[in-house]
Image 1 (cartoon, rainbow, N blue to C red):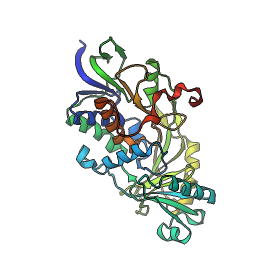
Image 2 (cartoon, rainbow, N blue to C red):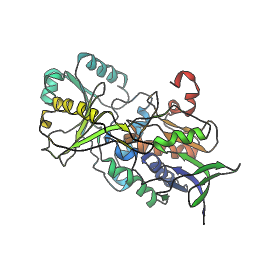
Image 3 (cartoon, helix red, strand yellow):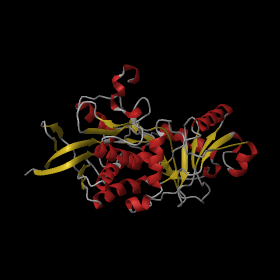
Image 4 (cartoon, rainbow, N blue to C red):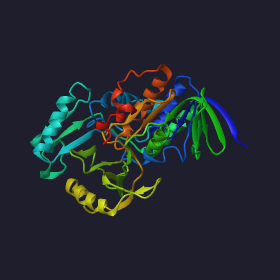
Length: 374
């Protein structure tokens, strides 16, 4: 027998975006149901690097990132766990003068954005950060950026939402979303839910849903290539990135070094893994940057399906086609830090019809312009 439910909002997807949206909706007194096909936080939200980084984001994204930063600062009060979060700092390294010039230009552009970036080069750099050897010519340090454990944090948002009164259903795929002229009708294998609002936060699979709603977007799957070493004596105090990409890493307090960089391999619609060619490219870069890893044992690699858009910006907006439908997806490579801010913005957008944080750059209809769709 199919169970009948009525609610104000249905959120499709129990990752950090969907779960945090549900939590902030409940804080505004709004009824919400979360539908997750697998386990909350088990997909994109649980396989990422765990960087809690504002440095390096686009100017359009920084106000949202700053809003998220405020929530990270009260994480335990917000969701009941610290999830190994620490403001350890994020250090971006330049390995050439050209890359250092790029860091200098970024610091100038973001001077008034609250990042408090510290540029270092020469002897000052090697005195403060004795890593990387002679190949490092400079760097940019963001002292209040940091890191956290995505495998702890992402499910914790769903637990907090449930504790606040959200109805969270795991192992519950959505079969169909229709609109009867008055309300949305969301069907799962054993439920039919009527709601005034639907939030599409289905991660790498959100594009399929948007297309069914008449709003196709040029999203592709971009699997991260991640790995972790055995525990080592603690030596790396900051989350570390390299200007221009290629490699990034951090060391957790237990001593394991988590790293990423390069593409993983998509296996099918639901699975991905690291690829051996990428691992072989990652390891020498890591050892060159951090000689402490020369004899370290690699104990695990992994990947996952993340959705990426061609302009590297997410979609956070109301539908351009259907009133009451909202989208929040396309966060590959940078959604983890944004999660609390996105949830707060989505709840505000639904409750008040507007966001106090600028999100116009993230409209879904920007891809109706052919110049933006490639």
